[in-house]
Length: 229
Image 1 (cartoon, helix red, strand yellow):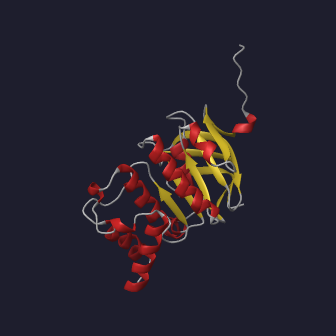
Image 2 (cartoon, one colour):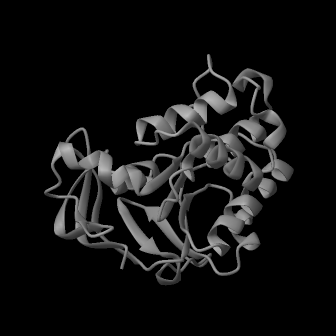
């Protein structure tokens, strides 16, 4: 298991957000995390990269015990993860190339040729090789999100964590984002993605679904609904 939570409570700013979470996934899985706004989806995702506190029987991500992780070890964990945010979080005063170069240099890349080649490769994956010299404000929302995905895969992460990556996008652009994430998944990367748009799940047949509801995170298969009350 590359993520293994057993009987885990998840906190944000000392407030209990999700309780008794049991969540385990293997390599090369695609997981959709759904639920209404405010039910804890983002907090759960933050816990995976040590930005929300966890306590429990087992709190492992990529063989790292998050309940005992030292602050000095957090960067090493995050280097193995790729994180995609709903609001892109690109540096507005730098071109696409400089945004990506900044991440590579910050994570230990030294050689200019290696950096340039890696940036070219990830821009090919997201189909934006012609935007390297553009600033974020010159891109559409969908293009900015594709650059955010390019940034997330720079270091060949083992897991992509995507927090509502299509939340601000129209349905056609959202489909393009899902297609790109699906291609990354098909190449062998685990994807954990939160969304409030249930129709997106139809585009990834292999995906599992978990639901945040009433302070719990549960497999969709365990939740039943009924109109007869």
